[in-house]
Structure formats: C-alpha cells, structure tokens
Length: 350
Image 1 (cartoon, one colour):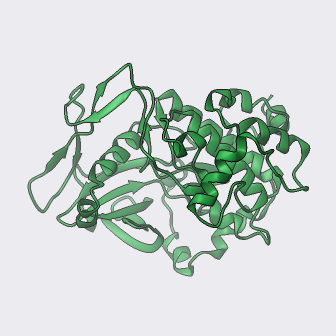
Image 2 (cartoon, rainbow, N blue to C red):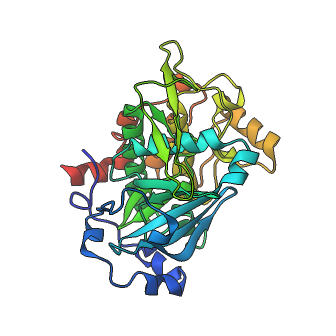
C-alpha cells in the first residue's frame, strides 16, 4: 500500500515552514496558481517547446552541470521546475550519455513519491528538463532548520517509509537509483519526492549504441534541425550487476568500495545511511577524507555500529540489520517496512 496523505497524517513539525525561508520573489511568482496545478496535471499545449514558452522565476538550485529555476508555462500558467544544462559542459565532461539515461529512466516512471518529468527540449546551447515543482524544498534544507541538523524520529520514519516505497517502485522496473542523499529528496505537500536520476542504472541491460524496440527519445531544437538520440539497451541475462564507481562518498557501500559490482542492494545500504544521518545530523561512517571514510565503511564488518544515545532502541535495531557488510545479508525493503520502528505507520494504514 502506498503511503498517502489520506492514510497517514503528516507530523506537526517545521516542515510546513520551509517556504517562509525561501526567496521573497518566489511568493510573488506563485500567485494565481491555476486549478490544474492542484491535481499535478500539466498538459502539453505545443507539439514542441522552446524557452520563450516559459516565464523564468528565481533559481531553486545549482549543480556542477545544471541550474534549476522556478518557471511558469505562459499559456497554462502551470508552475514547474526547469532544469537547464549547458551542452558545451556536458560534451567537455563526456556525460551526454548520462543525461540521455537520466531522461530515459525518469520518463518511464510514474509514482507519487518520484519527481515527474513532464518533458524536455533543447536549443543550440542548452538542454532543458521540465520537472515537477516541489514547493517545500529539499530534505537537506529541512534538516538544517534544526539546531543539530537532525529530524525528530517521528518525522524521519514518515519520510523514510515513503523513500522506501519510491525505491521499491524503481526496483520493480529494474532501476537502481545509486545516489540517495538528503539533497536529492524533495518535499511537496509533506510528501517525499525522490529526484535526480543522473546516476540511475537499469539492471540486466547493457548500455550501448544499438537500438532496442525502436525506442527513440528526442530533444527538440527549434533553432535547427531536430536531433534524435537513442538510449539503447541490449538485453543480457548474465549481467545483473553494475560496476561503475559512483555516488556520494558518505553513502558508498562496501561492495562499491571493493569494486565487486553492485545491484539493488546498494540502495538498501543507502537507506540505512540516510536513516542514520537524518536522525543524527551526520552520516555513520563519516571520515576526514576519502581513505578514512572508506576504511570506516569496510570495517563495519567487525566494528559494531555506534549510534547516539538518544536513538530509540527500535531505530538502533533497524540500522544494525540494514547496514550489513555483505549485501546478500541485507533485508529487503518489504522486510524493513515490517520493522517495529515503522509500527506506528503500519497501524495508521490499517
């Protein structure tokens, strides 16, 4: 059963005050939101988009290769997040295929706890993604509103449960997220929205340059002839693990450090790290540098996990079962959802 506002009440916490911390210009930009915004429906009014179809608002975020702006489609008035990526940078850093994969995988998803990709287009210099707008910001910003940068367990378990359900859905599509962290978790109407599919991978497939099932994804460019690209995959039953070293340092699993290949169990490890961090304000294996963090993670096999005294017994018990060195010994998400730590949520569902 998917967690919704209808079957569980959102905890009364400062999460509702995030918007007050944001740019005052955003409040003006949010005025007169159309009715269809409430139902999260965005109708494509044009066969092809171009940047002039949108009114660009304040910046919501910035990364190494992209900027995200609040935007409004002029014709419908619909608010969305517009992700802008410079083609030159993508080519220089040789990550064009990563962007293609991000679009392909996110385009295939449809879940209330995953940011929706409405569409995409390009011009001569940039690629643009049209994404669902989450008005309450990200989990990282929420954590930093608290003195110790940690959330109350009551709120943490409410969020973690939703994150688990979003990852379960991805895994049902053979998609592994591989970059779970507070910055990639957005909040909208007190619901978690998993974002940033840049490091996602699909298991049991080899990414290559040969077409499969004629799936073609287009980036439309009004200034020149349309350019097609294909994120093509050749099925390979023997390959059920990925070998790319990627992710955020504090969230890297033992098998990735050892370069042994990894599968969906890497997301289960990341959920354990996230549970710890949002309840403590810092990750469990944090080191002063790469090597120290790596050794802290690899030593988890012989060293008992150290938790703050204020962690509940149920939380400590859950973390000790999830953050296990051997990926094959980690629980499934369905087993994790049955943990005592989530009993209150399960009772409210029944």
